[in-house]
Amino acid sequence: MLGEGRMIVEARDNTMVSKEVYQQPRREGWYLRLIGTVVVIFGAGALCVQLLFSHPASLGHSHHPTQIWSYGDTGSAWGSFKGEDALNLLLDRNLSPRSRQVSISAAHGWETAALHRGVWVAVLRRPDPGDYYMKVLLLKRAPTLATCPDAWGMVGEHSTADEPWLETARRALREELGLPADVVDKQRPRLLLGSGGEQSVLVRTEYTAERRRELQATALVAVVLSDDAVPLITPDDEVAETRWLTYGEMEDILNNPPSNSEDEGTTLCNADIVKLFRLTLDRLHENLPQQNNPRETQRRQHLELRRH
Image 1 (tube, rainbow, N blue to C red):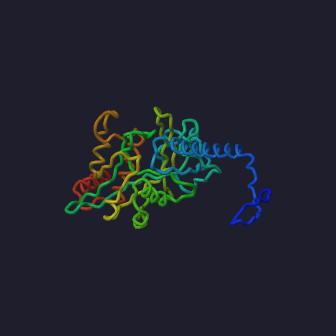
Image 2: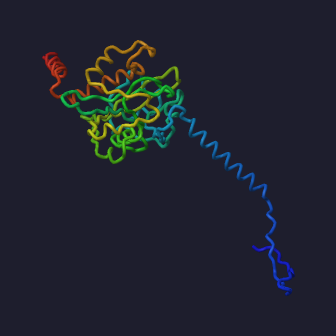
Image 3: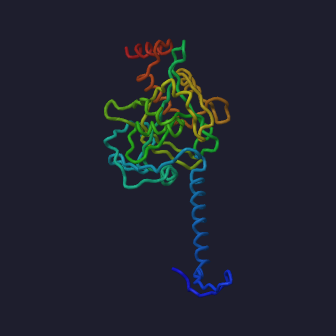
């Protein structure tokens, strides 16, 4: 809206000219707009701080909300499952979603831990020229992570609501290993469980020092990367180091784990994770045996003798 008009007279080339000049209205309430601007800036800053520090050890790796699930009549709470349930096979058809999604921190809380879904991915590369050993990728967790810092593990990822197991695995390849989407689309991950409808195992473990708990229906997945994908691996900030190990080298670690976190070598998080490693390695032997591998041949012969 225009302001009040007033007539002025000015001299121009000895001619008196009149014109109407409109004045802008006075801007009332400027201080209210200033306060509003400050509030918006403060709110945006607070949101940034929350996003940065809600997962203080997880910079660079996106964390999606995770769905809480019930298993049959057991429910979803930590106390509903017992220690002896750990690594029990779970039937997909008995998993049903609850009405809520929570942050990863809440799903792992000491008092709030609840059943959620995720994958444990064995990423493999083909044998080098002249060799017959496939190798498995191990990742050393960054020292800043809240859970199991400096420990070694495989690629792990939580599932979002209704996300199929293999899609979670593909997303892990993109987000955790930094593989381009078009490269990931060419890979063929496979489930290592599922002969009788079982697609996952129950991972139930405590991280006492960190006051965190894990209660996850975990699908075991394997993917043999194409040769062009291996050089493109660029782990996110949650990964401090990578290492490629043969099946035999993994067995050596499982049979002779370091006695404490100060020992040099490949330290695993805890005894429950060692069992998960061992189960995964057994499934790899069954699903992806090392071709023409003397050690693998000897192992199979030993199993045959035990059966008889």
